[in-house]
Length: 372
Ligand code: PMP
Image (tube, rainbow, N blue to C red; front, side, top):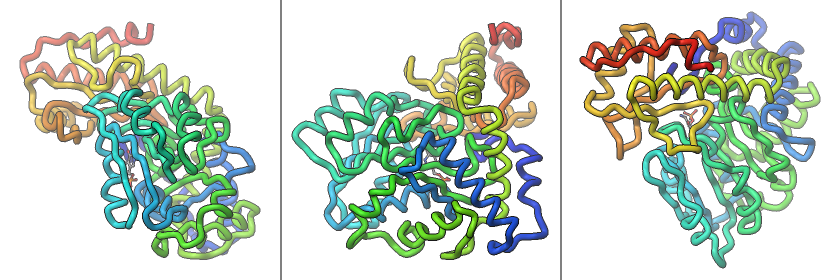
């Protein structure tokens, strides 16, 4: 139950194993077309958006927003943790004017701070992270997207840890670019950066852009458009086996429906938090901002690396905490993609047994009671 790659699924993995691996093959062209359509579905995007599946990872998709930036452009990033801060690293390589708002660990940047940064100012791009993987907080983008719209040209959301686990409504929220990756709540292997981009971004904002070569989405656009129609195309070799796996994952997501999938994630996340609290541990995310996909758990007097190592002996892999403010004092649980009730039981069981090894007299909760 690491925070990504998430819990694997053999059917999805095996879909990627094929002797017919040519990107020009009929089999691949049809898989790519289906995968692009599946991406539109999980993103809640309509025909005004172009879906992209590019080799790399979430970070590659993040850096590709430079396709729509020019030198000296003003950018506002609302960062709720380590992955929000990643934009600082990306933009340090480019000549842009960045304002980064930072939250305390476990919190979202406050509305006052956001409104203050917006007051009487226009940005080229405003970026936020839907679910911040370093702490598990969910930013209420549905509340802010419309406000951002009035203060910038391009609204960007990093949904690497949310898409396919949280309900995403890219078109309704009027987000211009929504980003994700293959290996989290979509539940496919790592190897692809995924994003949907509003078509008019290409007409309005690409001239004289600062993007590099492989992250310049202008190079990928004709390939994606023609692949959407099943005709394929080449700019650079696509992540072929990941695309086969993505097609399988998306077809199962469509069958489950995003509504039911996000409800399943919400229900499991709630049960997990209830069980954790019943053992006397606290959740990192502030009340009301907990996500469906990632939970950070505070440890009062146990070193988190030791905790994660010990839990592994009890059969569950958790992720160590990475937020510098809480380093060594918390661990993270990924509960996304193909996560089931059984996984929640196993996680609570492993946490209880691990606590016992550290002389905590926590009682493993009656596992059915957490679902009441
Ligand atoms: N954004 C968020 C919210 C993430 O969780 C991650 C990965 N943990 C990234 C961006 C970077 O994605 P990747 O590791 O796939 O490059």
